Length: 119
Image 1 (cartoon, one colour):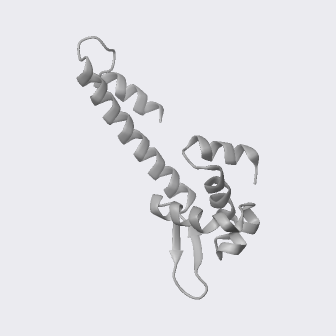
Image 2: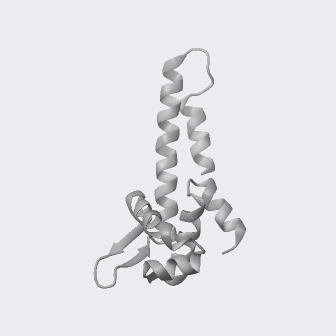
């Protein structure tokens, strides 16, 4: 996996193992946990915990069966979800900061619209 990709995913909130796992799944499309661990360079002892955590975050889907398979959410969907979550957090933060001291800060809906336009 390109180191820059792993670093960028970590900047978006992925752990190191999650970034490696997601990248491997993009390449593999769907695979068993052992295949993912091997391709991602994640220890087998950590891959199930990593995959289940990623499923809870909505980054991975588990395909029940024998064997159990895993697939990733499509990159476009993942980026859309991360962006939407970030914008929601940003909006909530602006509201909370304004509530602390509404008269003295520079956060306004107009300024927030400028920030949104950059995304």
